[in-house]
Image 1 (tube, rainbow, N blue to C red):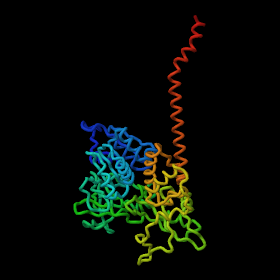
Image 2: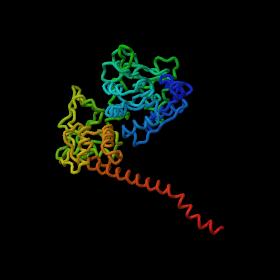
Image 3: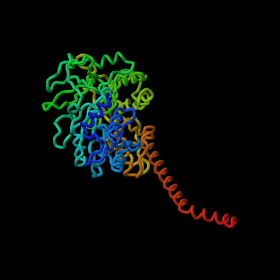
Image 4: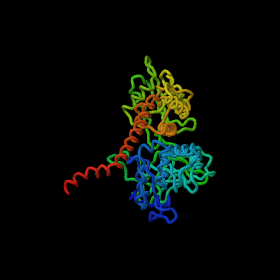
Length: 469
C-alpha cells in the first residue's frame, strides 16, 4: 500500500505522466546514485520502472567523481536525479568550475539533509533552462518522501535553509506541541506524518513502535496513526514549512541518521579520553561534518590519529568524526548540561599532528597544492592525514575531480581511505596511470592481432587444402 500510494504521489508531484512517456519530453531516465540499502533507491526504482522509463545506475567510481558523474548524466541522457544536497552542491561547483553548466534535466531533487540556501542558489545558477529544482523532505518510516519545495531562481526566501515546502498529494503533515495541538504560524513544533504512506511499525520492536507511531488525534478511524519524526519545523507566513532541526540530539550527515551518544560512548572507551562530546558543525559555509571534542586524562596525550583508528574499529565510517579537538573543559549551560552551541570551531591547521614534510616530487607538489585549495589550509605536508586536517567525503570528490583534470586519471576512493596522505595519494595516482597505460598497450596489441588474424588463418589453411586436393 505504501509503495503504490508513493508511486501515485510522486507521479502527481514530479509529472512522470501515467503512461511513462510524454509526447514533449520522452520517457523517464532516472539516475540512481544511492546504495540499494538506502531508501532513496526505492523511490528511484519506482520513478523509473513504474512509469515505463529506465533506471541508470551510476557506478561507484562515478559517484566519487563529480566530473565523471556529469559526463555520465550527459551520455546516458538522464532526465531525473534525486540525491543529497552535498552531492548536488558538488555537481554544481564542478559544472561552474568548467563553465559548462549542469546537464539538461527535467527534475533535480535534493533531500535527506538540510539544504543551505546559498548552496541552492549556486546550483540554480548552473541549472539548465527548464530544469525543475526541488528540495524534498521525508523519512523511511513514511515511504521516503513526504513534501517538496520548488526552488526558483531569484525567489528563494531569506532563510538559512531552503524550506521543505508543502505535503505531497495524500500526505498529512502536522506541526504539534507536546499536547498534540497544532502550533501557530512561526512557532516551532514537532513534525508528524500521516496517511497511507506511514509504515505499520518496526519489526519485532513493539516498544519503539508504540513510542513513534501514535494515534491520529484528528482522524475519524481509531486505527489511523501518525509517525513522530523527531524533527522540528515551523510554518512560514506563506504556508511553506521550514525545517528547524531535531527534537532530540540525533543528527543527519549526508543523509545518514547519527546518534552522537553512540560515538561519544565509543570515544570514552579509548584509554586517553576522560569525557567526550560529538557535534555536527557547518563552519565557513561548508558541508556539515562531525567534530569530536575530548578531555584527555592526566598523563595521556591528545592523538587525533589514534582516536580515529579506535573509532574505525567500532563504528561505520560515516560515524567517525572528520575533526577531533582537545578541550580543557566542556562548556555547560545553566542546567549543567553541555552547551553544544558554545563548543569552539576547530582549527583545521592544528589537526595534522605530524611533523611537516615538504613535497619531494613534482607530482607531490601538485597534489599538496590541490589539498591546500580544497581544504583551505596554508600548508600541507606529504605525511599529513587528510581527515586530521578536517577533510570530509565531499572534499574527496572535489580532490578527485581536480586530480583528473591535472593528471588525466582519478583514484580509488577505497585506496584513499586506506592511505589518506599526499604520499599515499601519489602512489595511487601513479598506479592508476600505469594501469591505464598497460590497458592501452594491451588494447593496441589486441587490435593488431585482430587485424592480422584472417591472413594467418589463410596461410595456415593452404597446406591443408593442397593435401585434400
